[in-house]
Length: 326
Image 1 (spheres, one colour):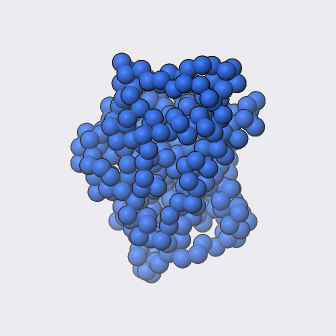
Image 2 (cartoon, rainbow, N blue to C red):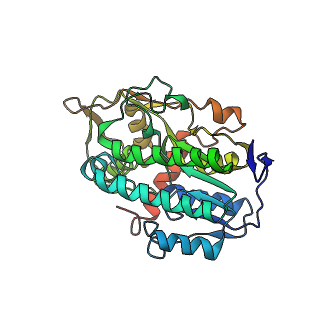
Image 3 (cartoon, rainbow, N blue to C red):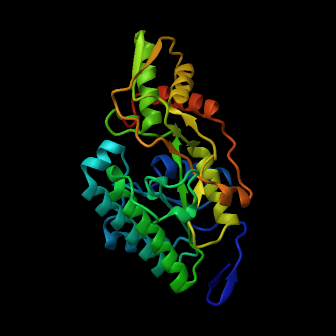
């Protein structure tokens, strides 16, 4: 429990009629959170596009909070990208994300936002953390160098939330999702993550009747994937059932090899050609799996299995070819 003006705080149902701001409501995670809150009966959801409100503009952010006075905030806004983008533009990922977080969290504090959920990424954990990765692995080792700037920004956000809890007693929390996928993902060939990149390549191969699709590496690394609608459901669950200083891992607790993922994607798009592996290319980290004991202990578990989630994502991708990112 936390203390607000000396009163103990116990998590419970949120007020569906309270002003609730979803920062980043057009992105992969934010749009899913928006959908979930809307379906759960929230009547006063507030969102702004980056054109309407630049979260790097401190004065603009404070003016927005003064005007809207949200009671709850989900901070899902961030500058995101794949390995290439993170490795090429580390200054942008560090500077932009720190400014976004500091501005939103400082404004939330000034305007006495009761409940904040800050969303980060599993890349905050050390590159060689023991698997499955527990929450207490944070800051125990070196980060993956290709995305360390982004990771440091997200770690700063976690510590910012913890500092607010210590200094002001507000029941703000943080959640760190595993690899996410689903409607609204980025399918750009140079900036996407493994799942959307694979969907795009295999869908194109199926359409063109390509006899072979060649993937990088051996296909042996293991990765965990969570549908973004499950992530959104976990967000609401945590807001209503969890209060603690530590970040909460959000995932499925299970993983698949990249080779198994390729087979699932190929089946979903209807690709019938051969799948080959270029073992001269790097595999990356052998395994990345989150320990989700804290989340499960709070009473939540995912509902969308990987095969169904991939098929639904393929359907969304094909429906939104003209307006998708990438």
